[in-house]
Image 1 (spheres, rainbow, N blue to C red):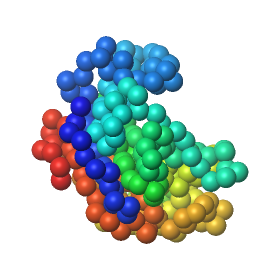
Image 2: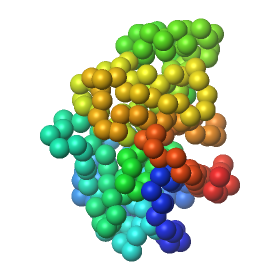
Image 3: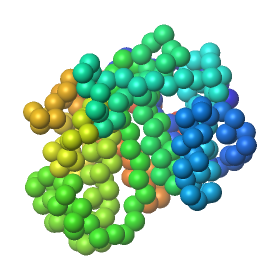
Amino acid sequence: MLAARPLPERGETHLWIGDGHGSVPDQDMELLAADERDRSTRFSRSEDRRRFVAAWASVRRTVAAYSDVPPAEIRFGRTGPAGRESLRYRPLVLASSNARVFLSVARSEELWLLGLSVEDPIGVDLEHVRSFDTEGLIDRCLAPEEQQQVRALSPGGRSAAFVRAWTRKEALMKAAGLPLTTAPHRVLVHPGRTGPVSVDLAEECRVPPDRWTVQDLPMHGPVLAAFARPMTSTGSVSVHDTTAAGDGPA
């Protein structure tokens, strides 16, 4: 278990990056809740199942360091605006804490990413970059302005640009808890811009708060990641990289 640490102050964000290095499947499985174990059995490939179990066990160990609850006894819940049950992602909360602790988790192959904040919702996403035909996806998932930004690049750069847009959109949709009917091209995240990007949700997508910030994370190798939080969350962002390539807090 990680050393005990205080929860972030409101407005601050803690981000954790890890991998499956050193995982022990049997011990990891013992930490998972029944629904997480059930989800693990749905993977047809044993390697995918191992990665899922390792990621969620690591998330539980990380979250446990913020509470007095052992990893196996951590309870997660879901929350969302009243009357908005059909959300794409109902924000994840730490049910075993007195404070309202928002969590967001993403996985890609061996890697996992955890975002944690108090009172303010957060969303994270993580994807490996591969070479693929982006043409149809650009039309379906990107706004016209975003399409122009991506298509202005060489064919070799479009895959990474599309994944950058996608991770930003996913992070924002998770944080905002947008409805299932929300089309990705309605969420404009400006993949051609660097640094923190301010996003005003379109009126048909709007849920409070309606102004957000989405930002890329520095990652190792062919991996892109992003996190989103309300624009009012202006506190510090602490990044803790526990992967073999990382060197601790950043």
